[in-house]
Figure 1 (tube, rainbow over the protein chains, first blue to last red):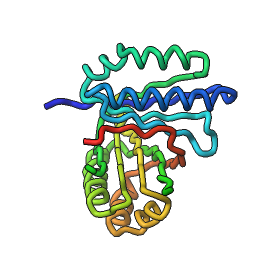
Figure 2 (figure 1 turned 135 degrees about the horizontal axis):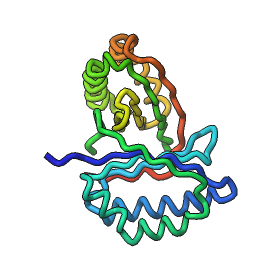
Figure 3 (figure 1 turned 120 degrees about the horizontal axis):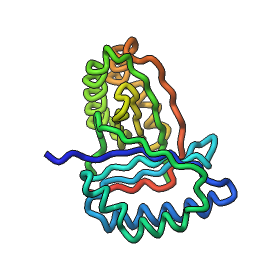
Figure 4 (figure 1 turned 90 degrees about the vertical axis):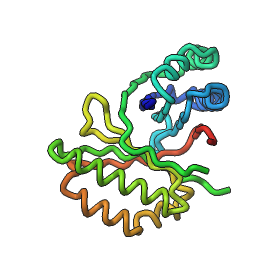
Length: 104
Length: 104
């Protein structure tokens, strides 16, 4: 059985560049979900009380899909574009307990 | 336009009761996604390095759907069942930036 690879990214953005960052991550997520069969979900949210604090909940079909994502041209473009916007990035590897979602 | 209500729950579980907690939250999530039209996603994961640290990424159709969820019998059952398993609970209200997911 294929085991999904899931991680949570916690990102702090330079307040002066928050709007530009949001444009970049929206474009990146749209492209990745569309183009990569193994990218099942990329859900980016900002804390309502501190919008510079971004969380991304990431679900990949398996570890290979995650590795392929890291090598994808659109991911590299996003990383380069946002390099100077990101103040800190913390990746937390997690294990699914229950991934419940409407099927349509 | 309807605005989705999204929050992240960060939960610390009593290590001795972790397996019982996982059973309870799995049953709860399955029921809520099945029974409540406004519960779009409830995604529970545990930190791989510290499984007693649980994160739940929650997407509701709107604020009314979240309020209805809090009143649902299966939510109240889950809260009662897990009351003594949960050491701490932090809810972070968040705003969607990009919620990308495969459509099927």
